[in-house]
Amino acid sequence: MTTFDKREEAFEQQFAHDEELKFKATARRNKLLGLWAAEKLGLTGAEAETYAKSVVMADLDAADHDVVHKIRKDFDAKGVAQSDHQISRTMDELMAMAFDRSRLSSTICTMKAWRPGMSKALMMPCMTLSASTQVMVM
Image 1: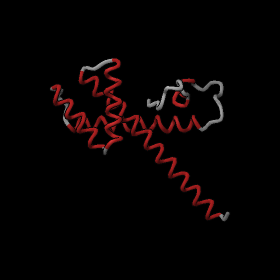
Image 2: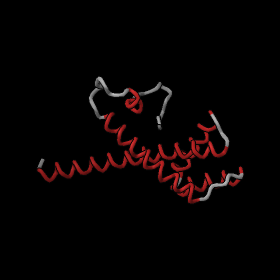
Image 3: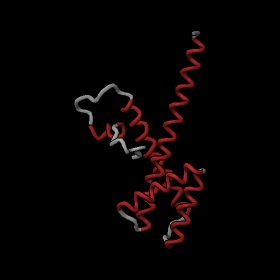
Image 4: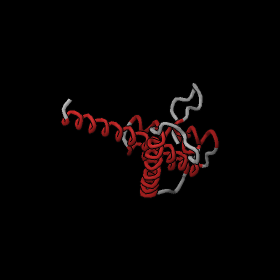
């Protein structure tokens, strides 16, 4: 394998890693956005979690604007006074937070083992909760 081939393979691996990171960050952002919107809608507990999952699924079905459209429609139905600008601003803030968490999770998950002094809470995204857990989105 030539140096050029190795370099090309490294770029491809980096691209795949970056895309996976972006996907995870977007899913986290949407869950956090769903929880934020659920709070505004007066939902708590299991209802809030279910609503947050529906926001995540809305993004998997279509583009970002459909997440905003879903939340806007739900806010209008319940009479919640939030502008599109406020929703978009919250989305941007949550995306930054979710991206930071995804990068942190990615870094920790690639470490070989937990080390003394490392917070076990930071390892949480890497741990499997149970056989029935499909995806863990923080």
